[in-house]
Image (cartoon, rainbow, N blue to C red; front, side, top):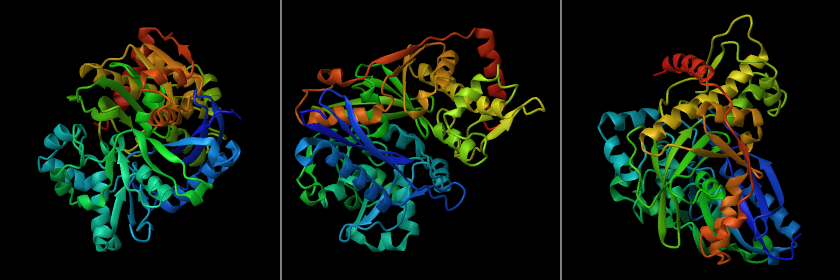
Length: 489
């Protein structure tokens, strides 16, 4: 362990929660991780136990504080989280009033459809950069108020927050804040706003008094309760997971883009200081606010990526381990005509079809387990190709894409994405850039670096993947893909 004081990052994801120790230079010193229970009460519904999230995050954090040699060895804490997931709790007791509604949850699709049909989407997109979809937090909050009697009965005692708000509340003993990147994903804050938008809150019936204070991504936001770790530790960095990963990849300049391959897949392109306006079903979002300067991004959100491999493993038994997917994909020359459309929880960007369902087409007696697995991995490259066209049409075409996330450890998949996009792809030596981005923000908040550019030394080295597929082969793949996905359009 380094003699320097460490940065502790709490990385609360969709399927697990982790705590990671970083040196001030960005070296990973140690980590602890626990899985989260996934609850599926009905088709299209996905929930987490908010109390479990807190307890398991705290357990991981305490393990890392002990590993560091005690709270005196921790300079500050950075928090990054699954975005859009909503927790509702009682301010007085600190207890959740229901399970958390996860970003993947689709139960509010009919409400979003009704709002679209009533003509609200154009104004919502103009203000927030977002499309009316169950993915975002606002309709989830509205659903909780309408369907959980305890939530509505709490009145001014009700607290809403995304997961970083819930963690900070528990870490500090009652500080209710959210950072600007998470706030920009609720559909209740205008892209250029500093506070909650009254008109948007009224549209969804969400009382502003229940919402947290919006803060930047780096600064001294508060301290942990001393009894948690033996000494108060400052919380100095906060960011939603995809924005944190973009920072962790060093996409500090306009036009630089990254893709995170986790449970879903999320591509963000730095758009500089001007709020982006997409005409091709992409999302405008806040990338970060550091040193009083707000930077924006254009985003394409894919709902299913790593969760597709998990489904192949856990639900239909085609894989013993997720890592086996690479060897199986390499074991066959192609997918034997099999095409997978990965719409297990709808299709995200650039299609935005909440009611689409996954499909496997092109099956024949020649198809084997390996062909289906390869087709599943190929579907990621197909979606990325369509997203690349949408980004280009919005004036944000990619000449280079930086990949990260657990699924990017699959060399075959990264090479296939490079082939389908016909551009160079880069992957950092440490693919967990979400936590690294939170560490960078925490270090800036501590004053260890003056800003993002000064913290560039914390970014990991990268491997390079050059495209090696000829255009006729690429076009044959895309023709089959267009036929399969076209059935859903």
